[in-house]
Length: 196
Length: 195
Image (cartoon, rainbow over all chains, first blue to last red; front, side, top):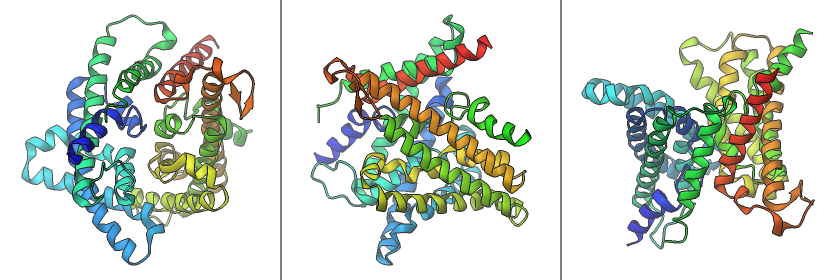
């Protein structure tokens, strides 16, 4: 039950884009078409789960040797290396998946939701609803967060596709109207607050 | 004259917040009040100036193949330094900025300026470029924080201008960040096209 609540909370109630403000750059940058939004969303789900598991284990080492102050440096390097590795491995074993996700992988290193979730999980600083904040809980949280990101991205891309056919005042074209649409979506997501 | 141009380029012409749209996550996440926005902006400016200077000084020593990881380590070092300083001397600010301080590492402005400017120019102009972009970012965040604080709670830098009951609460909450920034950029675009 606690796991179910974690998933609902991370996808809808505390959506990473609309309430936590993480991962806004790709959210604004790669949301012009639904296809690319789905590709980016899938890539984020994949990398976020992997990076959360790896950084969680590495953090145990850091804590053991009392090197917590190195957390930021170590995490960002691990994530950058991991993304590179995933890219190389995907290219070898699954060229079709690489074709679909390849372009988005380098962009993910600077996606703050990856580092953000890694730090949150390592510190146990997220809503667990009674479950113990360990590796399994952290992984489920990471998965649900990534799904929430993908959901927000695809929803937003759908609206922007329609929006591109609308005539707008000149100053509003491009990013301003995108941000205002995101604001309205965030109001819609506020409706979920309180369900868990 | 040239120095002034480099400085003003980051501050106005390529303003990170309103023109380049870089570093959106801290821009939206930390601007619930003008003070918070300013604190975040200054922390980023510190990292930006230091990393720009160090990278410009070391640019001939860094092998080309691994330059991105090296830049990231340099940036992460300064982020850790500023994180410890804020935690030690400004615990209240540390509390309200929270996760966004370590996330300066992945702020696109810092790596962007390192790659686009500091890797090609000398130390002094890199310093000016970092200062310009950093202050431009601070300006953007402070302005957005001020607008949100004023509309949401009727205060400016914690000084009450009108009673809180008349404020539009949504501007302090998450959606207001998107709305306020959207309209501010629209106003900026309008002013730019007029010139």
